[in-house]
Image (tube, rainbow, N blue to C red; front, top):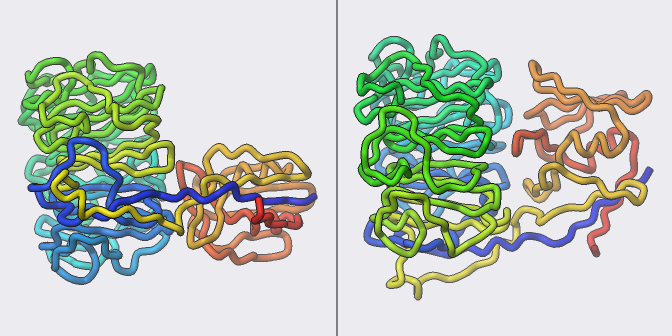
Length: 499
């Protein structure tokens, strides 16, 4: 058998160099390509800082740095992206008000920035300008695609373990840690009563969890009805609200969103800017259906605005728009969902504070809202091409037959990685998954290979085979080097770079 890999071009991610990106005096009410960062995979926004996960699995940050939230060993602000120190093989990120979380491919969680409430989880209340390992936390899902597995509120943090339990630490003034007390914790504690959880989200001072059966749980501050139980009484224990068959959740500052299996979106909580999308500015203490919205596949929320992607890959926004975060070319609030006409075929959306981020066709990153750009500074903006971007797509051919990948291949440290299951099955192997130990196994005839998430080796009949990059989770699938996988099953690999 012969395995041939052909590259059909590299995505050239067009990005813009924008100074003063966090200054509130500069805003964009229409989508702009994002700041100069190599090969963005995910982006998150705190109060006055932004962090971005690149396809090289490292993190870059820029903006305010008073508490060391840029993670580069200083407390000096930066309008240009700086590398977060000593973090590699990162698969997910989350940004709080002035602190950040990152999860590595081995499931370890790191934190940096403000620690005045113990939100870094290292057992102290000392802020850190470089990442520190969160104490007493293990077996955290090493993926952040789809429903989140780490989340950060104003001053508290959440993480989801592989056993479906939720762990929380930091500020607990409103009961946002869900442990039945209002005592802040500087190390993770389990949120009692939750099991089979598949996603989490954090608001300013409240928390959310999505159960595998579609149930939504909420706890913490309830001043604006964000717990969705018909009251405004806060709770330090999770509350099962009366909304079911959900597939995703998102939390704004003081409002919540839930996406149902049929594509409907429900919202509740604060509505002073129309962020609930029901045509009013009336606070809702129970889930209310968002109006005038086509079937939705993804949701996100900023401080006081909301976003959705429909099954036609159109992006809709609603709520606060004073900083242009709705992307409709105005700064007028919207009480109903409004389509973003400037760009089409949106595949991912992110939001934080008064900023919005979107991915167009897995090719371009766009950003709009507070502190992004303005017509007055467009002459200072220059387009640059990122020559170390992710692979547009790789075609793998086995004996003249193309393999169809469920998730597009990526370029990590200049090495092509592909979905493990797809490539093994394409070579005729039977594939099994050991979720308890995070091991994927392929068997073909007398040959057997085992690949553990986070490991840089493949175990085969002949022994251990070293890889240049560790196996990681991307888009909820295991990825590893295509060449090493093929050769571990005894196949020859030919790279045809001319095609």
